[in-house]
Image 1 (cartoon, rainbow, N blue to C red):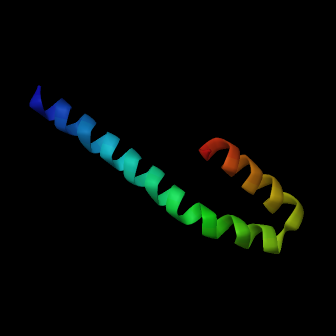
Image 2 (tube, rainbow, N blue to C red):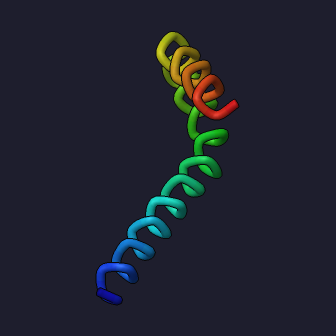
Amino acid sequence: MSNTISFNNRVSAALMLGYLAVGMTAPFVFPLISSLDPKNGKKASVIYQKSVF
């Protein structure tokens, strides 16, 4: 039983880390995308801001 609990904790920790990593990198990545591809980049940054805030 303890194995399943620790496994679930590991999964949730990994998800949290992944979410944090995305949250940290997205503000830098989206301006890059928008500078390379203005039309799609603008859309992506709007979607990102709506999903976060």
